[in-house]
Amino acid sequence: MAAVKQLGHLVLRVGDLEKSVNFYTEILGLSVTTVRPGGMMVFMSARGNASHELALIDAKGAPKDAREKGIGLVHFAWEMTSLEELRETYQKCIDQGMTIDGIADHGVSLGFYFSDPDGNEIELFHELPPSEWPQEGYLFAGEFPGTLEGQVGEKLTDARL
Image (cartoon, rainbow, N blue to C red):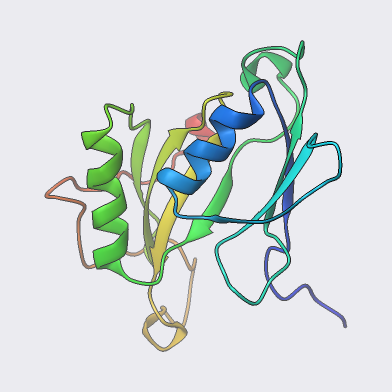
């Protein structure tokens, strides 16, 4: 059976394209790979070998907060290369005065949640190599062997889904 390999890309409508581009470049370290002629769409990547993982569309006049829709994107997650880089970015968000919506211990990964300027929820996470995953049972049931600056991640409960 065919299966997807990894997240390919996300497309978001944003209320302030310049502010969003600055957020994704300055906070997450993405690079602009190309801009659609006319400037209404910006393509961004975290890797040098991808056309984009994120595309932003200028949507002036749209609802200011993505959460107002009710149905739609819950969050999107970017995997960090190492726990150290996750910690560094977590601290960068704190230093920028950003609100951290939660820290999650998914057993095989540790992550934290925050929102972009349009209210889209983002998770940044670091995942253990598959050789360290549990061999039986629910993959996300264990405890991640680390913290974010001493902050222990919470387990996801059905009430938070």
